[in-house]
Amino acid sequence: MSDPLQIPLHVLALSCPDQPGIVARVTGLLFEAGANIREAAQFEDAETGRFFMRVLFSLADAPAAALPDRFGALPGRAA
View (cartoon, rainbow, N blue to C red):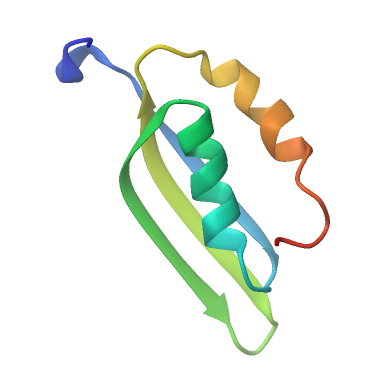
């Protein structure tokens, strides 16, 4: 595996209507892409019903450019 100090870090920040399964779907897609999650934080704004998430991750052997296509394929409801 590559030297961890040489692997670039990426930040994914998202917000959407809150619903069950968002964390599982996001982390699952990152896992499938070969990402290593270094840090994650999430919360729901009860007043607006929106969910917010920030994930810091690295991709040792895969291009980050392909990730938008993976996340664009998410259905409207997280399962």
